[in-house]
Image 1: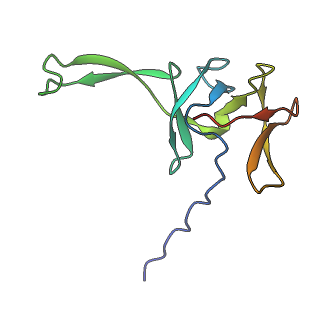
Image 2: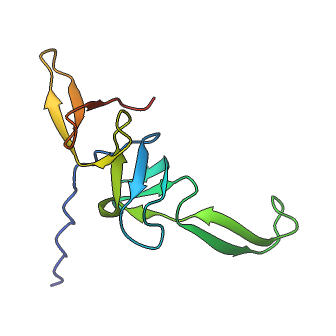
Length: 118
């Protein structure tokens, strides 16, 4: 009888596509960029212009020359912080439930609301 591994616990992702984030750990530390994609299954994000990697591509119909391309690699959610648009500082985020039932993101440092990117 095989034993199944317990499923990884899903964390609530407070960062969405279009948000401005700052990297707080790793080689790309202190760099800022806009979130291009959120990868929920691996709890990571792809940030524009941050954590750039080179990839060797063989020639194909879509890329007949092949060669070396540069692309953004994913960064774990624990290594990025949301940037407060009013103060420009990276801050932790908490959510507040409004009277009309909508959730609002609040920057912990300043207490200012962080609007959702559209």
